[in-house]
Image 1 (cartoon, rainbow, N blue to C red):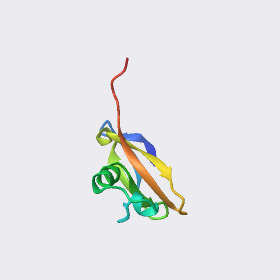
Image 2 (spheres, rainbow, N blue to C red; image 1 turned 180 degrees about the vertical axis):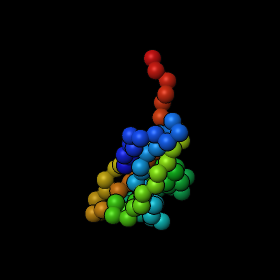
Image 3 (cartoon, one colour; image 1 turned 45 degrees about the vertical axis):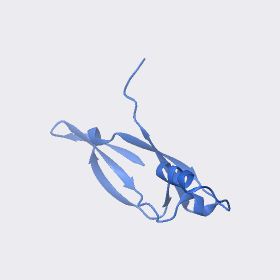
Image 4 (cartoon, rainbow, N blue to C red; image 1 turned 90 degrees about the vertical axis):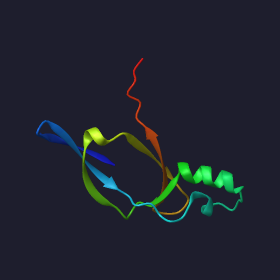
Length: 92
């Protein structure tokens, strides 16, 4: 989650960011299916699990934010997955 801080320090803007540490589990551990190791590695590289109740806050320079995360709920309470997306600064 990103909360914009409206004041600027030395003409630079900062964001107040909620940081969720990743769990050591993977997305496929929640499913009752088995997949080839290569497929598992690819899926794990795109999706991470986190506990929505375990987080801390960090203040970061807004110009350093280059990715956004998309939250994907799971069947377990308080456990969600996320995947990152690169910002696209190009406009048509």
